[in-house]
Each structure stands twice: as structure tokens, then as C-alpha cells.
Length: 272
Ligand SMILES: Nc1ncnc2c1ncn2[C@@H]1O[C@H](COP(=O)(O)OP(=O)(O)OP(=O)(O)O)[C@@H](O)[C@H]1O
Ligand SMILES: [Mg+2]
Image 1 (cartoon, rainbow, N blue to C red):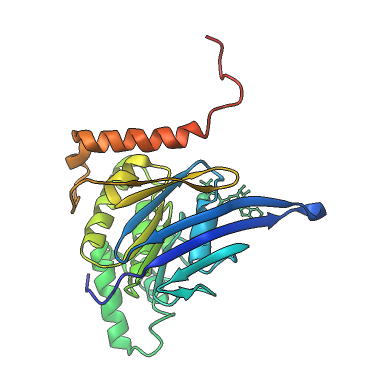
Image 2 (image 1 turned 90 degrees about the vertical axis):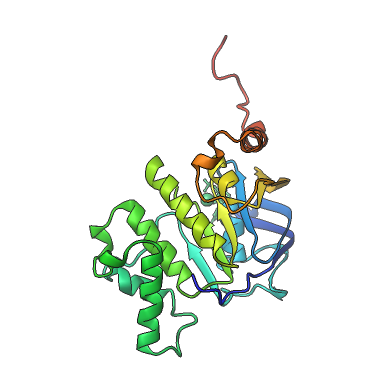
């Protein structure tokens, strides 16, 4: 990856979010969320289903309004989608009627208006190569596997060389092996760039492997429960390297315990 980016700083300050319900009542989804993300940092958000991870990442992306507090990217309050933002969705969200190449070109629409055709093609080719899809540039999404579609989604997010990369469970729908490979590819990509990354996942091992810090959210209302620094050496390029690592296992257990504590069923599941 080329190094045109200076990773964005993100400051989430006392942010709250309510979704209004019928009859005037409101559902408080997030309350008093505080989080400061440094330039170039990789931060994962974990927490129970429904705790507000997607809501929070969409608010940072300027795709959803917040009800209280403020979110700034590089010191500017987020109003609308910030420039130099890459977003990867859980389901890749490719345009089915466009080839892979043209899907990746769309990632340049925000920032690439003044680029000539040849520059656009070069940038797109570089990112398709980065995610290993050069040979598939002329294919349509329906001709690709799930893992290939996620790679294409990643290429589309990276093509503008974003200062801020937001990823909402990008590997959630993939089989374990493809997932491992894409985790390693992502680790290599971020190791070679200064992009700031916010990554939502339910997979705690994935979070430990990729992150500088893991933010654990509580459910209803969602707020920051604990921020766990991942004090393992970097770069971490191979998942295997963590298999026998005691510290990695400790971190995983600690984060899992924090998440599970909030998911204790109100009644025992079975009598013993
Ligand atoms: N558009 C909406 N209108 C009303 N309520 C919403 C809306 N979007 C989300 N919610 C509610 O906000 C809460 C948080 O949802 P969100 O999708 O952010 O959770 P999540 O942590 O991403 O969950 P998951 O891990 O299942 O993806 C949920 O209770 C959900 O019902
Ligand atoms: Mg979600």
C-alpha cells in the first residue's frame, strides 16, 4: 500500500443515542460513550448483540445522527460522511450489475473526481492486486465466493487511501479458514499503512490478533465497560504465532469474561 495517509484521530465524547419508539417513548441504545482513538491505531469494538456497535460505527461514519455528546474526526465535528473514509460492511454490499473493477472504482467517487482515467485505473488495479483479485477484475459479484466479495469490499474501501477505515463485522459471514486468511491479509495491509481502523467483531481471537486496543461495550444502554490494551508485539502477521502465546490467551479470556458477564441468562439454562 502506498503511504499517502495520515491516520485520522477520532474523539467520541459523552455520546448518547436514542431511537424513538411509538407512543413517544425512546429506546436508549448508547449512553455516555467516551473513546479517543489515536492516529494509526487499530481499535476493535466488542459486546453483546444489540449493544450498539453498528450504531456507534455508523455515527462515526456520519451515516447516523447522535442524540447527545460529540464525535470529531481530526478535530472536526462529524456532519455527514467525512472525506477520506473507507467503510466495509458485513455483507460486502457490492453493486451486482457492476464488475469488480467498477465496484472498486466507486470507492474513489468521494475523493477521485479530479483524477484522470489512467490514474483511476492504476489505483484500482493496485488495490485489486493487494487483495489478490487481479484475475477477477472483470467478474460480477454473483460469480464470486463470499470471501472474494469481502476482499472486493475491502479493496473498494482502501482505494481512496482512507485516513479512517471503519469495518462492521467484515468477516462475520465467512468460513473459519477464509476468515483466518483475510485476518492475516488485513493485518499485513494495516501494518503497511497509517490508516486508523475501527473494527467491529464478535470474534475475540480476531480482535486480539488485530487490535492495539479492544473496547468492550455493555448492553442496554451501551457504554464503554473496559478498554483492554493488547500488549502483544507487532507486527502480528500470522495467526499461528498467537496459538501458543500465553499472553494472547489471557487477553482473550479476559475480554470474553467481560462480554459474557453481561449475557448471563436470567434463569439457569438447565437444572444440574
Ligand atoms: N433504525 C433503528 N431504529 C430503532 N432501533 C434501532 C435501529 N437500529 C438499531 N436499533 C436498536 O439499537 C440497538 C443497537 O443496535 P445495533 O445494530 O447498533 O447493535 P449491534 O451491537 O451492532 O448488534 P449486533 O452485534 O447484533 O450487530 C438494538 O436494540 C436495536 O434494536
Ligand atoms: Mg451490528
